[in-house]
Image 1 (cartoon, rainbow, N blue to C red):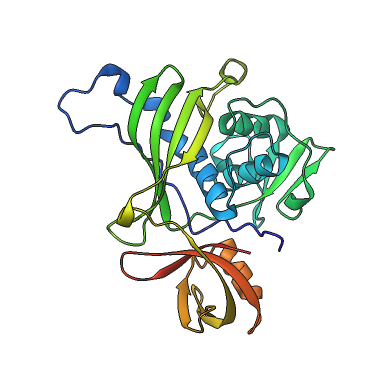
Image 2: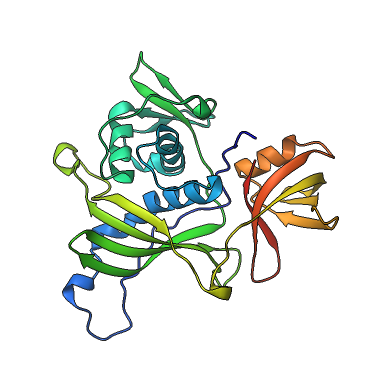
Length: 281
């Protein structure tokens, strides 16, 4: 079944936390101040990988463009050269700016791949203005945080945690080990937004209750209870209510389903017992 993108219920507040817990922290273990906004590209990569069950693979044109779609769709307007016409859901991104974003997501970035067919409807290119047009993504009910930090010979190692903001406990959705390096495009870009590039991002194995990994099920759609709740019948015959962000792509897909349609979802259970959909196809 063709995978549909769902710019999840997830969103980012640009927060960072230096790895502390001691009164004195070695200098090489103090996170640089200009690394704080790297939560944005790491969030985009994490959601891209989680929702589409992908591994970090910058050499794959489909992965590269899906990741760029997540990044620019959610955070593109942070760049002064990205525009959005009033009443439009599309962002206008000059090719040079798209290349800037690619150099942040992929430390070994060399060039933009041709747009794969899977991006149709989400990203397009207009050669007359040398710009890409990207459907704007929604920001939802999660947050990316940096915790443990270490400067190594390979670069800057951080633990990145995608957490739910649905309750005060901030339940962990997934943690990642991320390696950042100095942005190789820094010398060629004026007013640089992101001073680092992602060299690697790997999901971490979490222990027991600390993990909130997505469960994947193929279910039958019974209808919508409200704008953010769907009733689905699971393979064992039980009927469950599932939550999702009312302003997300998931909501759009749910709204297009008819009673009796089959749908594959990824979800996790929150601390308060709610079932939260994080992907759909």
